[in-house]
Image (tube, rainbow, N blue to C red):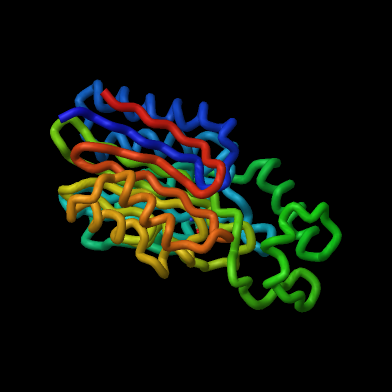
Length: 297
Ligand code: GLY
């Protein structure tokens, strides 16, 4: 059995950011070289992506619609069925590493203030994940919502109705700008792991939960492989994307065919990407540009 590592910077992320995905995949390979398993390698890759401020996860996460909060989601699943996730966690550097600690508890998902308090209890220090780039991106998005911007985010804006100053109501059919990061790994012993981490979508209310911390939507892993999805969370959850694709691989479909079938479930207007590793193959693909990397050996 050979190892394989796939990383991505999110559906619609610039392919020019793929160097960050390569660095993340190399961190995963170094972990395997040191004797770490697929789970440890996927966590190393995802933590590296969270630390790269160009990506919407960990440091660099986008702001919620209120312009002040950064709430992050992350999850991890291994092929022995273990799963851990955090949602709407604040002020931690690496949400995916907190999600891994949730695996050690009787719970699957910790949310909001409870997730942040748990992170502190198990040793994760206070960290401000905001960046100038994220604040500027938020300002541009709000300008478009107000009809004053350059239109770059106009596709997402019309579904939001203006309320009193600074308040917006009503969801768009699609909440876009969803560049999650993630990884899938198969180690030489045939174990699999999948991860996802994100600051959420561009126009997002506080408290919103997307696909990244939802088992079977953003990630799934089992004895036949591992899948990590990226894109608009609400659309991914509705289609149970990661588990659907995993099931097709388990039934014998090649990863590339299973991934194509998964993408075909979405209308063209929905950004979506997927990484799939099976026992004998792997693929990372998207219906948009997507920063990505693949290492195998
Ligand atoms: N896929 C990221 C999100 O919807 O939150």
